[in-house]
Image (cartoon, rainbow, N blue to C red):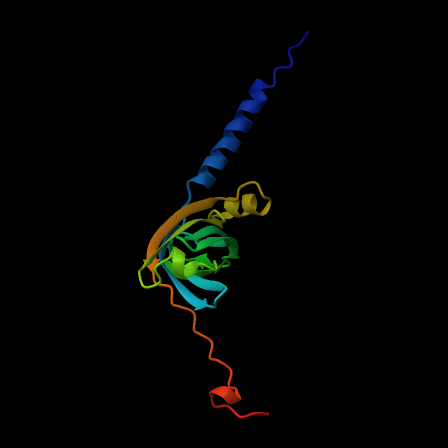
Length: 179
């Protein structure tokens, strides 16, 4: 009886697939640095932040970016977890800047938790999903086989401005006119 050993047929196919996957994995990856985080708006109930990023491509082909997934933590204030569509491409041999948003509900006892006159530490833990360079990278990304993510992090400090106090409504008792 004849042996049904698929070894001689599968070995070249497995080697080819392995080589192709390794070739896709050897492309350039984006280098990402969180350069700053700044409060951009504040009310008594919440604060909005802008996180500045610098992304670089040391490779010889474009690196299309898909999205950021991140956790932004402000010590004593709160945590934001989110996603942001990147929808940019890093040209070969160049750097670009981008910003991602975050908003955090403020605790009612914020002034007791944090010294608003001192720098407040922040931390970002994140990843950017991108399409590997090249024709094969595009195909594998489009069919969902390979969607690489480059992790990055950053930290620093900023000051959180006090919320503007609301002005009291004018009334006859404090100089306003009666209706």
